[in-house]
Length: 213
Image 1 (spheres, rainbow, N blue to C red):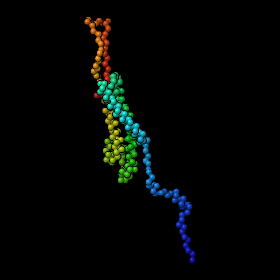
Image 2: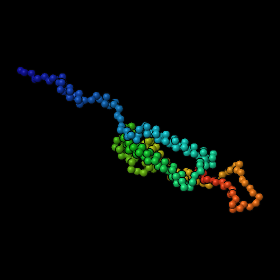
Image 3: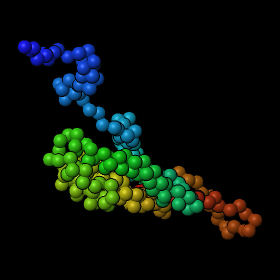
Image 4: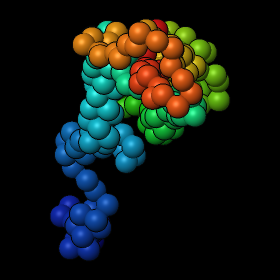
């Protein structure tokens, strides 16, 4: 009477190699940190540059205001350069807004994936259904605050603020006629009428200062 062949409980070398190729330790896989793709416009250096730019704009505006109050205007200017004084600040803010729009777009684009990675949504489908790209800025601001996406809300608020500043910046610098006071100015007087060949009196020329209203 023959006995049935016994199964070899020890795996072969080939089976061990297959398991090593396919199998991954559960603990190491579950605890390995996952890094999201970060666009270059969301780098910390870019945010530091924008913070420096915003602080410089605020400091420059305060400096211009103090100089204007102290000297009753910034400087003398001709009416031929009125467009430069009127639309110069507008051009600077427009350039800042064009650069900030790239940062704002990337923040709104990455918001659903950030919500999934942080576990803010109950399901991944709900996070993916959030659309912060197509709507207009006020609608994006409302939905981002409602969904507690404060990064999107902050970037959208900055975009709206810069847009409003562009509108009002055209009235930041204006040309106005300002009375000028001259002290210790000598005049020549005569006891008779001057003829046509006589020397004319010196003229005091006044210029138009650039003043902040």
